[in-house]
Amino acid sequence: MNAPYRQSPSLLEALERHLGPMGFVTVAPDDNLRELGVAQMYRRKNWNTNRGVAVARLGSGSLPAYVEVLRNEVGRGLGSSWWNQLGLQLVIEMGGPPASRGELAPLVAKVNTQGVLIQSVSTYERTTGAFSHERTWGQVITGRFQDGICAALEEVRLAQA
Image 1 (cartoon, helix red, strand yellow):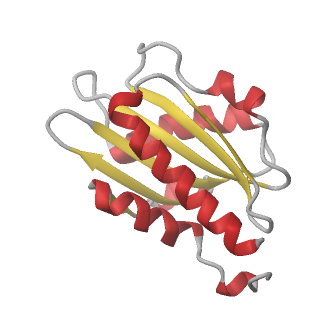
Image 2 (cartoon, helix red, strand yellow):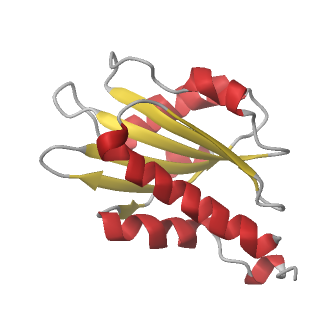
């Protein structure tokens, strides 16, 4: 049975439910990030990891260019340094169908050469809940966080089916 969209769980609520138990806290984006389309951020930082999740909406530009802007700006917003690099997971609402895994694969970091590493990119279409996801190496620590993101996306998709 189709759940009315307004009664479906919001992605932000689902992410909070799945990421909160893993130690992520909600971080409100500043005005600059909001102008870039960032709706919400989540952060988990402890003695051995610095991980972030940003939920954003792609405007009229290209996905690769937008991911690079988010890497730089969200990295500033959540904090990263050479000794405490940020592993960033991006969840991006598309204006149409989600990107293919082939389109997402080049967007995730293959090697650790940056202060902010894109460890996963998920794209989704809001009205249907359809989504795609691509992740990179580092699954021992970060894999469960990425699994939580996919579980939240799947929860929203199933509620809209």
